[in-house]
Amino acid sequence: MTEAQKKQRYERRQFLSRICVMFKSRMIFTMDTT
Image (cartoon, rainbow, N blue to C red):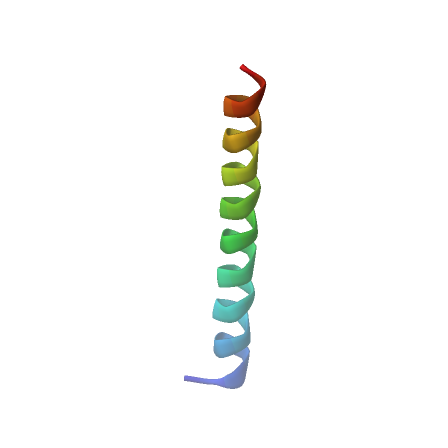
């Protein structure tokens, strides 16, 4: 596995985790407001 592939995979994982966190916080926010 090359460095470029490793970097790509790492960035994708960071991106997905960020989306997951945003989604979770939004869910919590909507649950709190209702």
